[in-house]
Amino acid sequence: MTPFAALHHRPGRPLLLPNAWDHASAAALAAEGFTAIGTTSLGVAAAAGLPDGTAATREETLRLARGLGRGGFLLSVDVESGFSDDPEEVASLAVELARAGVVGINLEDGRADGTLGPVAVHAAKVAAVKAAVPEMFVNARTDTYWTGQADPGPETARRLDAYQRAGADGVFVPGLATPGAIAELAGRLTAPLNVLWSPEGPGLAELADLGVARVSLGSLLYRAALGAAVDAARAVRTGAPVGPVPGYAQVQALGER
Image 1 (cartoon, rainbow, N blue to C red):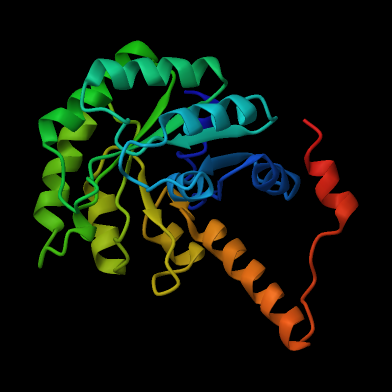
Image 2 (image 1 turned 180 degrees about the vertical axis):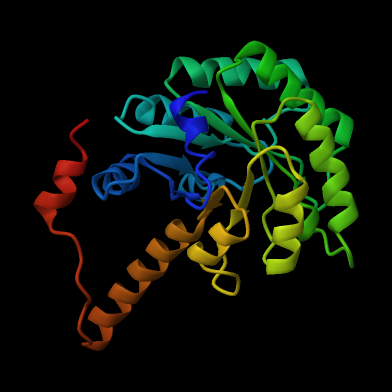
């Protein structure tokens, strides 16, 4: 078991994974004591002026991974659906990421149009990555709770069963936020369960009690940073006080690789 995988097997202590979008955000999180950091595909895409979830940011994702992969923390990268429906191409991407120092990837079955990719195709991607880079932690994500289904439970279970059989090290169900549904799913899985933190959902302590192994922040920090920037500009314009912000020297230090 790799050090990153081990963080998913601590009963009652889920891994809280914050998600960065550039060097400074990752460095700031590492300085705060987070030993494992993910990336956010929305943040990477939006920062580059590209749409998320459309396989448009393969090069931007690789560039960021190469810059962060030796940063002194465990790095997991959000690769959308692998930027391809060819399992071998997805496996080749995983090899490049591993060479950059990446220890985990988040691989989703959702499509830009709101539908889900075929189960067999996504399972083949998982299997191909594990065959090419056995030590890579593959977090297989299903977007069943974001498709508007009245009862996504059965389809979620069917997909996660297939992804576990394909070799997924963990499974991720964003949008799953009801305590009862979380506990039921965590109890039937063999792989660690990852959920997306939600202000309307259970807190970290309750998620731990429900059996969750990993809690991701997704694009939350990127969106919060955008909101804070606009709030600061608005405050200056209106003469309102600007809240505490990092100093120049503090941010300059984050740029020291």
